[in-house]
Length: 202
Image (cartoon, rainbow, N blue to C red; front, side, top):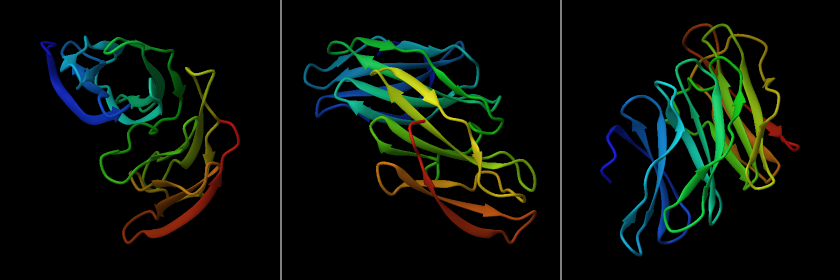
């Protein structure tokens, strides 16, 4: 690809044994997605997801053999999600984004343990903590409907106080439940806890 990028993210989605989606930072600010078709060695033209500065990919998951959901965010802390659709070998379309308006929801590290779990292809569970010793440690659901429509549910706080930022880990149990590990405490040593979360729709 001759697209000018300062960063190529390690995240990717394999749609099948030949086709995959990849992400890069737009040199002039923002985030783009492009497709690769290994069968023909074709690299598609990158398509802009957002032009907001300091945006990075948080996580991404396959929905069908032609669609994927991408979670991304920037320094302001809100988490966003959008469906990307592949219509030919490398032609992409980006849908309308949903926003989880919660300070800190997109500030989690996302490079260590997972913060987002795919419960099934249309249902996801997100966890995050907004601050250490203050703020909230919360979970929120995300639902994909009608193929490309993404909707975040309202966040729910899972502990009363003494939160610890970057501490949550989210795992699938069933197609409707997830398990969230988190830390609490105003200072080290922190307590480790876990909670089972049931998700209905978003």
